[in-house]
Image 1 (cartoon, one colour):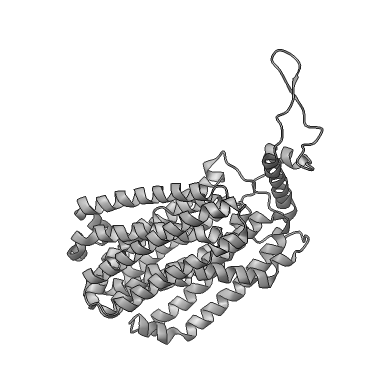
Image 2 (cartoon, rainbow, N blue to C red):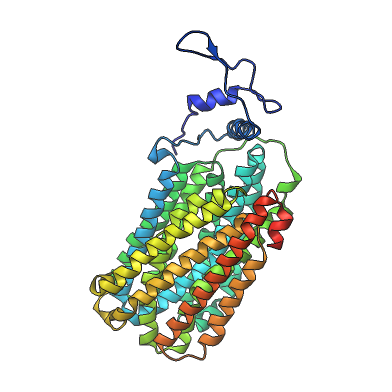
Length: 483
């Protein structure tokens, strides 16, 4: 992996010393046009705090052995690379979904869709490790070596543990998803291992602002899937080969992550707050919140597999292709907005602007599905799914609601909220409990959309009510948890 040297600006910042919010006495004054010197601008408490953070971050990266700076002037060496990489990842992942829907047909694709939905739920642990590592390293760069060692150690153990548990549960997975193939169900357990490992690796890179290797990992998590998976299903079109392509495609990003993190860290000071117990506690808390959302967003396809005829279940899974596209389209909004949502003074404005942007994108997608049915059908899977052409705009509304719900869930994580997660679990139980008494595609999609829209309204009202109180209280953690 290429290493990027520190910029001159960072070296200058790292070379200064700040104490009690006052810049070094060696800081030069600037010359006026008419002669004399212009005194430096006054250093406010907020500005001094930001300068101290810059000094700590640059120095911590030097001690940790990571020389990658936070570059904002180049798209390919800054956070913009993540947006590009995520776009490539989503397009390739979505492309494989479209190809699989066309090649496999409704029956086999319905089985594959249920497998992918199961992996999304299992992938909650991956996202939790990533969020935990990134937050801790960003907040406390002085202990990056300790955090990396702890998080990666827990990640490796957890990944193999969950893989073993899922392997034992293979008969149950096979029965719930109605796969009639133990080998296909076992691939879920195998795939869960590299997916979870990638989460810890990506979190460390994200926390250190090593955007280039992180971007490469994102690209590698989508491109091999479409290449390998497409080759396998063209050779022998069934859900087993499609799932095998997903499994093999999950390995390259882990190898790249290992390569990027292969260097030995310089041992630094340790802190009890980054010990194993507290890291695991945060991972479990984040997992519980994310699990609630992913369980809700993927429960309907599993319900469809159990209450609808195979053909209708396949049609429903095809409609969900559009739902997932609308859901994952604005992922870059969450990436950009999450740091602001973690700051008390920016939370409300960041959340409202992000929700407006996501809603606007969803509205465009819904209008497109409503007015351009034939074009939307191409993205779903072609003429085999024409029976749901007139309903695709409803699936677009569902994707919009889920995308806004995901943003609200990350807002809850940013302020370490607790109670709003219970509402998400309640919505999940509603979809599962009521859904098992339905017998038609239209009834199921109506239930899911209604449940998600009601949940969205409740979470939005709760967030808008609680955020000003948290900010006025100085982002006091106790107040945030009560909210």
